[in-house]
Image (cartoon, rainbow, N blue to C red; front, side, top):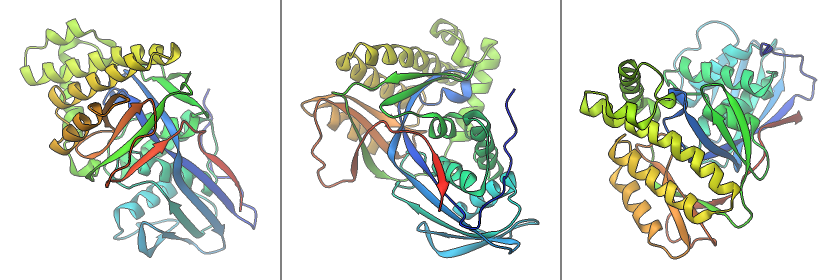
Length: 346
């Protein structure tokens, strides 16, 4: 039985926590459909330092905003910036015994599809004293994000908690079982910024979730448990496309994991590019900038494949290649499969 996340006593020195960002190698919009995904944690992330004192308020200082936020331990927090509202939601979930000062530092691009919000939530929860297994803490952070109006799935906080070095995490969102999949030494993973930032609460993300629920109602089961043949029986053309993406994407995730185990990077890259086409055509979450970037990367010698990563509507593309890519003029990060969140004393 899962234990409940709870706040524990904090030594006078306080606590420091680090939570990585993540890049989803393949399997987007499958998590909330009981399908499969294969993300990996990366070396970039969010660090939170908690310095407790006897105040009944938590003062949060962040490089995300020059103005500190003062969040009461109880009662309504009042008007706050988006990142501060998320901090208040995490605080409400963890409920530490005392307030104090929190300092947040991040080298993750905000709005880039690398799960900066989940990294922030996990790092803050751990720094404030939340305990529990990875799934318990992932659910805590999911509740916090949903409290501020973003209907996220479990993928981001779960991989942030459960990842291991040099491994991607194959997650079955029907059973919540996970499998550590080795990332081959010769696989170079690069995240390239499309130059278009996005916030999930300002996109059609919630609409896509509702469309998937409607399609699943027609099929009679979650789309991640359905087959491509089931999807083709959906009468409404738009809902059929949404179902087709989820069912084929789930199959691609399984094939991609096996390709990594065989060190077949050519096949893995082909599946990534096929995934992007499905996200663009059937799920309609790509943009012109993302499509152009994927096309350019796929025409680059040594690149096996590329796809948008994250929920779409902007953000970043992930590319799989045989060698490091030329960075050019845009922002790009060569990332490696890294361990999950960690916590220690200040």
